[in-house]
Amino acid sequence: MKFIILGCGSSMGVPRPDGHFGNCDPNNKKNYRTRCSALIKTDNENILIDTSPDLRSQLLRHKIKTISKVFYSHMHGDQSHGINDLRVFYMHNKKTIDVFANNATSNYLMKTFSYIFKSESNEYPAILKLNKIKKSLFINDKKKIFNIKPVTVEHGKVKSICYIVDKRLAYISDVSKIYSKDLKYFLNLKYLIIDCLWYKHHPSHFNLEKSLSFIKMVKPKTSILTNLSPILDYKVLKKQIPKNVIPAYDGLTIHL
Image (tube, rainbow, N blue to C red; front, side, top):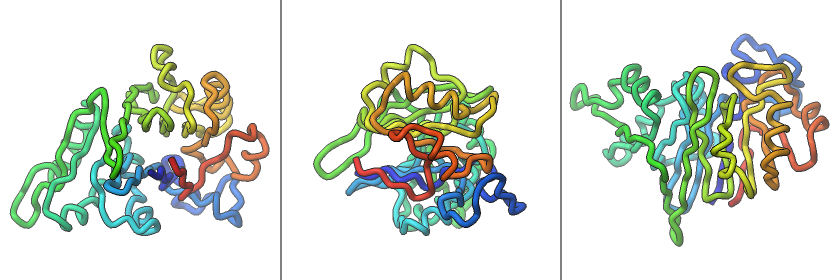
């Protein structure tokens, strides 16, 4: 099983649409960041976490030919507005793709992209099926069924979902608060992929200080900082963090 960080950039990516790199060195390929999406890849399934506006280029880069399911973290545009790029995967087998989201995200997706969930004509059939997130989700490998644990966290004024894969890896791209009752799920992880927008305080995201503080508390073997803004240059950030913590980059692949 592989976990691929398809994109690790903040809401406007790096560089921003106006070409602004901020503090990031444009000569370092690891500073080119698309918006946050991830892929869980097994022998049987390809499961997306979020559909960023950069989804098309991300899937082309990794030669992804099928999508089995989609797990959404939350409703914001930088996590959802690439949803239309899933059409081609419906066209392959004429079977709707299961999408899992919390109530607020489901309502937003249904309202904003109703044509994707409701057939308008034979030419434009529904391509996705909305499902409520359950206490446990599952993915299939040839030899084993893996458990995915959804954990609700705060992301400013909205709720976001952290996904914990087989009790080994947690992916939490957008977070401002993790509830103390849920800390037990973050202990003994092999990998923690966590929000780290920039240096100063932000009401909706962890900054570097908060990310490192949480890492120190739960002690994963390896931590990866994602949702990186143009403020954070890859090499500069890498020098500022412990050896078992690394900045994410687009295409970073973890073998589980």
